[in-house]
Amino acid sequence: MTKKIITKIFIISISLLLVACNKTVFEEKFDDNKNGWTVKDRYLLTREVGNGEYIYYTARKGSCYEDMIELAELPLSFTVEYRSKIIEGDSTSSTSFSIGQDRSNYFNFLVNPRQQTGMNLFKEGKYSVDVEYKDAPFKLNEYNDFKIVFTHNGKHREYEYYLNDSLMKKGSAYKMPFKYLGIRNCGEITSAYDFIKVTDDQNQVIFEDNFDDNKNGWDNKKYQIIANKIENGMLEINSLYNQNYHFKNKNLEFPENFSFEINTIYLGGNPDFGFYLTSKDRNDSFQFLIMNKNKARTVHFHENKDSGRDKAESLAQGKLTENQKITQYLEYKDGKFTHKVNGVIVDEYEVGDLEFNKFGLVIAGKGDLKIDDITIKKL
Image 1 (tube, rainbow, N blue to C red):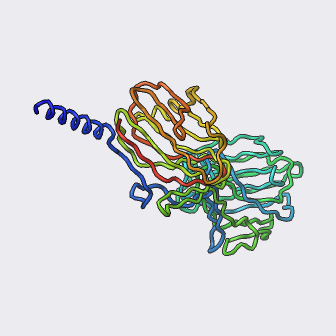
Image 2: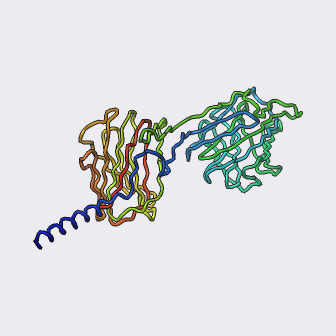
Image 3: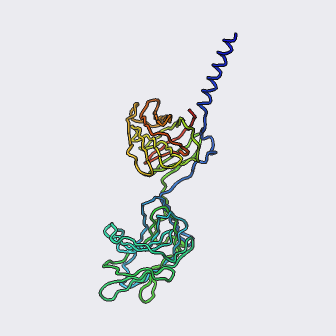
């Protein structure tokens, strides 16, 4: 009798231990958005002209987008006046007024959120003169007055550039006919313009726009890059542009050893997709991806640089087909990752002891997905 009781106690203890070791620490069924996913349409850029303003938003770091309109060729001497402001922007971003010969040859008069200004020259589609920023009396989130005075002395044309009545720069305007003007944003920034006027040396108005309407034919469009929603127990992601997007989730204290499982339905297109994990000290980040519809890929970044680990393994089941379900299962145990796709090991990676507290989803390139569920368990 005593032996039977001990056996029962032992079995119960083992069962409790297994339950404790496989405790769910995070579960997402997408029945609602209680976990705070960013569910909204995203745009590469939006341009809205009307009601006395041109509001211009761009979203991609390191990229510039201009909107230019053509005029009759301007005289040798003329003045441009305009008003603009930065509503919000990343520290590396800028907005500028552009004027020149065509879409490949023009001057940019720039300001940035660091309250600096400068000028550069775009010639034959490349930067001929790099911008040299200087501190300026530029006010954030309120309109500032700009003036550029072009004069011709009979031999060559010169310019003087003023910001809020202070001379910022002057120099040669080169041998370039002027018949295009425009607005240019670089990086993640929202700018606004409410007035542009061009006058000749007799103060006669050549061009004027107060943006009450779009009579001058600005590119008044929105370029959508992501559409996503939570519906019918799934997170649906439609990527409309060849860019890398991260869907961040709130911080989560991961157990020392854990499993991470995500079920995704591939709907179509050719996106790379999967999830990422970030260490608590932010020094290490890992991406576990399905790429080119036929490979599993592990990428390790250390201190924001490629660590040299970038391994891709062909999927055992071959190329993905539309509406196919993919299960990615990851174990982190005793400093080692084991990554499985649909039950087949695609990578094993010794990384050492790390603490994790952040994860999210990744999609890069055009394509459509549905995320069914995500489960994280203590091992």
